Image 1 (cartoon, rainbow, N blue to C red):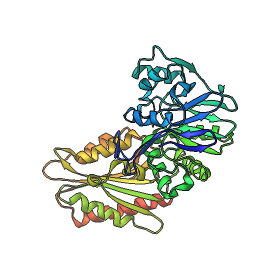
Image 2 (image 1 turned 45 degrees about the vertical axis):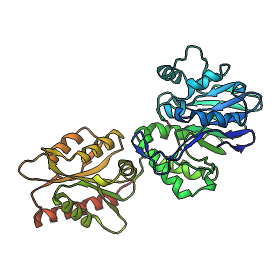
Image 3 (image 1 turned 90 degrees about the vertical axis):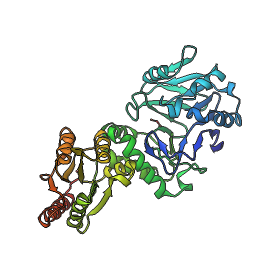
Image 4 (image 1 turned 90 degrees about the horizontal axis):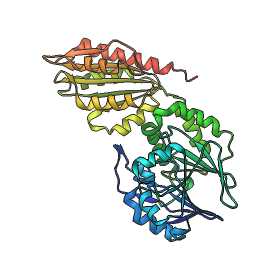
Length: 396
Ligand code: FEO
């Protein structure tokens, strides 16, 4: 689908309507690989698409201009979802120059034979005049890869923001005021939690830098264009990047014969106080992308597991590994679980979380076989403690 979005600017990207797994990120609303043509004295292609969509991508471009008219291809990020079609494209646009950062050049060389390609390597603040427009380049290392950059079009006040502010959201509508706001802000949150959370401090610095830019449109490489809701998406990013949390508690557990489940429910009962949002999450039936999204703004998390083969249950190991890797700001945590003839789950979880950014709020609770009334009462007290902690958080 080709769509004129602004004067002399066309969407030529591709919608991946049916994808439900984007390198383990679940995508119930599909994915968009955004690419745009900017027609000025020079013709510019802003990013490309995943190679799978190359044929459609070329048809989209050709419905506006011929491939040999393209002067510059701006590669804001070398990750294959945005640049894997570059080899095929460059075979057809031999005269085009690729504009990217030095790091992006290095990464492109790792994926493609770049020996015959012409590059313009740009750095912080470099500009490129394309006629009536000036493109300004803003490297954004680690948002999302070391090579990443934003491109700002001064005259139109457009920020091409690559992965930042993106949403995995397929849509024939290209602007935020043409789709359901709740759907896109929720997808933006899922995207931030699962792709960007690890780089929160860098994002916070970047947001400070952006405050000096006059921005009318934010055009990410995934999802819709922010136009009406720029204030809201910047404010959400500001909150997420500065690790702002809510009075929210997650109780995430896996269970074998319901003992750990009973403990989880007792913690839940203790934690359910006014003004506290408590979520009981059964790890084995809850998608890990969703767990990370809930985790982003939670204050406290209780992790529970039965013992299986002297270890925590495999789905809990997967959850802990994923959340630990996202390197969230300090979260207050508690561990609980059950065992039979041999212990292991709690010890395994404790060992795993030793070097994490999590802080234990209470001694772990474990039970042999079925939890007694005393154990369930301890669990309820733990829930109350978690709720009290969540209610006293201070985001400053
Ligand atoms: Fe959408 Fe980091 O790639």
